Length: 157
Length: 111
Image (cartoon, rainbow over all chains, first blue to last red; front, side, top):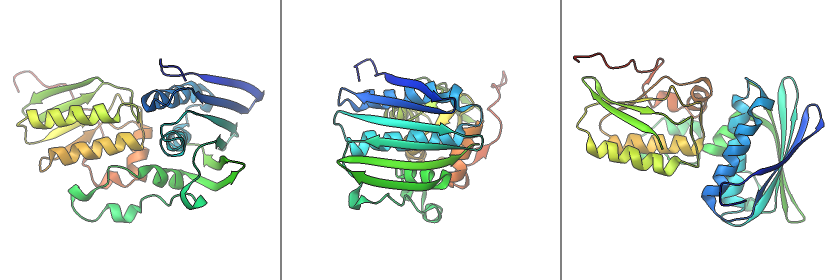
């Protein structure tokens, strides 16, 4: 990804309702990587339509997780495939970064714990996997040949 | 980073002029809110989010951090757009913040 914030490659229509998109990071600049994720999400908006909220949240969290934790400041590439159906969007995200610790997906914050205790004890991070788990179903993760592959399904709306 | 702050009789009104509060701007956002927290004597701070159409978990973390920086003064939120309201509901942060459904109206003259 270039210093000007990166670019997305692809987006070529395979079928009317399925797209592959790629994000290439040719710099380890975290800010530029975040900018590339933002640009991709904005570019996808017309394709996802007006009820894109849940999909956009899940994509943002899953892609930023790859940038921040799997690649953790290293160069890399993310392969994204979206299959858009009338009621749901199926997402497949592949990367060659670090595997998930223990090869399992994080649980995310426990929502009930959030509501007890003092304001000062509220977490400032860790909402990402809570959001993914609230919005997505059919989460499947595997590590194969040095690649992480995450699949999930998000109901539109 | 475009954040406007206006002192009114009702407190400090902070209007976020960015369309997104995401991982890209979470840190400068938090820093700006900390500056405002230090610089104001207002008893109450209301953040108008009516121009923000997307917040991710990093942006939410920055808003929570801002609330802590302002404590014990409350940070109230106003004018949440649909996807932002969904984010607050799913993370249960809608029961931590006081949320006003409508954007903050422009300050009346003479207030």
